[in-house]
Length: 485
Ligand code: LFR
Image 1 (spheres, protein in one colour):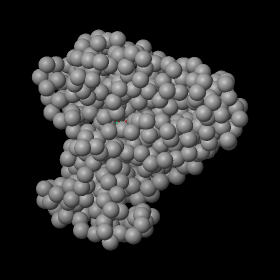
Image 2 (cartoon, protein in one colour):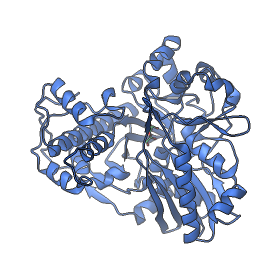
Image 3 (spheres, helix red, strand yellow):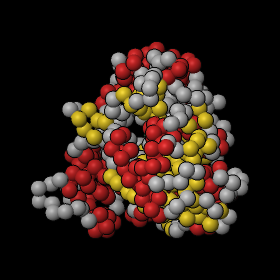
Image 4 (cartoon, protein in one colour):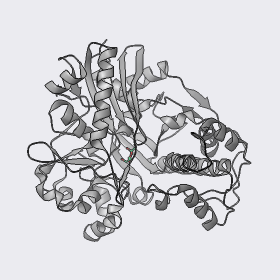
């Protein structure tokens, strides 16, 4: 069985993992982990791409110490963000982070030229202010000198293997791809104000892209046979590959910094109702449609915790286990906030924002940390449940179980609140769904695993640590501010 390296760069942490998969076997081991996050510089937010590359190099050296013969490497990251290259392939500038404010108001300007409803029928995407299309409209003069745009996973792929391409699942999040074909749509490219040549050709997950650069091999100690392979390079696409579903009657919540809530379909849903509910049709591995909605996810909680850790009286990190236990003891039915409020999107004083939102909704602002956590988690669970119900209503898909994968699966309180709010069993895990999905697609490309996504999912079901949380009856909560609709 071959050994594969998954480079998985998430919004709050990155990891380099080693894994292998074959019939009845799925192994994954972390060899390097590091913190990540948007970097503030003079009022703007950036991604430290070169710093991340440095971490990838450290990770690959650790891989080579661990195993002599990795057969392939693949990269996944969050979606929509990109780097621009000069004609000689050098990175121009530091990639902007999607939470940066430069896209404020840009979508409205674009929609004045092409109505949002027309755009939805073309690219199938929910409205998110930071979609690549809007970022490009805000980009300015750099585009005049840029020769190439590479989405972040493809940028790391270029640094690893001297290739330039665009992987299809991530290309589908840019707003520049045709929802029906998954390939660049000339009219959307034109709307973004860019030359078609700026975008490299789209390739599918499973494509073998080539050998690693000589200097990468020398630096890392990896063997000359190691290849770069494309997987679902959008982290959410890889996470959905590793959802341990038994049949098609499932919804998923890929819960990390974001909570991506939806179902998997064969065909996009492009109705006006679907647009109004802000549901997206992103492309999955094997041309499935990830019909989902972005819910704010653990971002709000992560920001609150970071804020508490910076308080003068705080000694050391917040004890999250104790805080969650205290939040579990807070009486249910307290105030809720709308976690999708755009004011929660940028980094900043999150505890105060949560309190303001509660007061605006007519509730009593949570005071103690445990009350804030309870409010955030109950609000998240309610938003997850609304999105599951919307996905069912809009797609017509029967859903009998909700799979919660990613870091959120570790949060027992969130899983329980989600099961109660959905009125459905929640199967929590695997935590490392994204890296597993990355490895599974590499293993399949290497010929170690046969078949369909269903075969890959059966293997996850067989091998992963999963916890089933049944919904409790009679837990439909009455909230003090009447809830949020
Ligand atoms: C999750 C994710 C979401 C995407 C958001 C921004 O990590 O990739 O799917 O909407 O980050 O890229």
